[in-house]
Structure formats: structure tokens, C-alpha cells
Image (cartoon, rainbow, N blue to C red; front, side, top):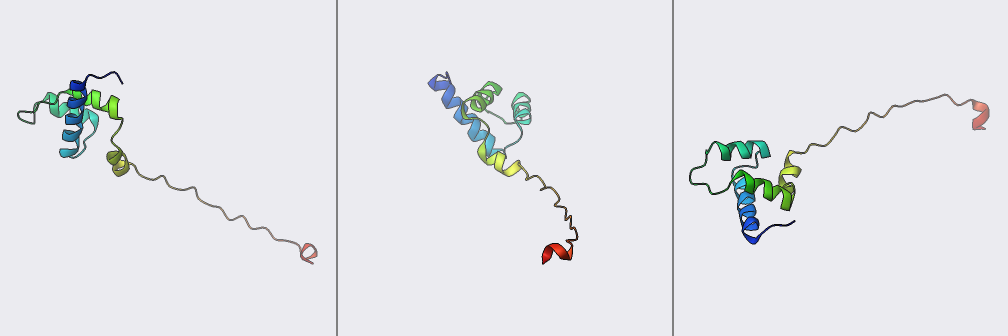
Length: 87
């Protein structure tokens, strides 16, 4: 991964904040940090990017926001069997 111990610590803090504010999308998380909507927040957008690179996508968020696809419709194609074959 190529991270220093400090970058790893900051990435863990970013992931903790990400979960604390309700797991927004990464773009929304970065916008929240850029607009300084959280006072005295030490997490930067670089920390969020590092967390995504080190830990990958958040599993809880993926499970919560991913929906199951509809199964394909099963067609019933019934054909008549001649009585000669049935005997």
C-alpha cells in the first residue's frame, strides 16, 4: 500500500468520521470536508482518498446501499404431447 504510519492513522480517522456522519458518498464526503462543514475537523480529503486506497470500499456501506437485481421472468412454454408417445 505504501503508507507511512501517520498516513495510516489519518486514514483510520477518516474512515471513523465517514461512518460517524452516516456513510455519504465519497464525493459528498469530500465536499463536506472542502466546505468545512464540520468544525475543528482534522480529516482532509487526502485522508479520505488514502483510506479508500488502503481499506477499499466500506463493506457496511456496500451492503446497505446495494440492491438486489430482479430475477429474470420464467416463461412457461407448455406443449401438447401426443397420446401415442405417452403409451
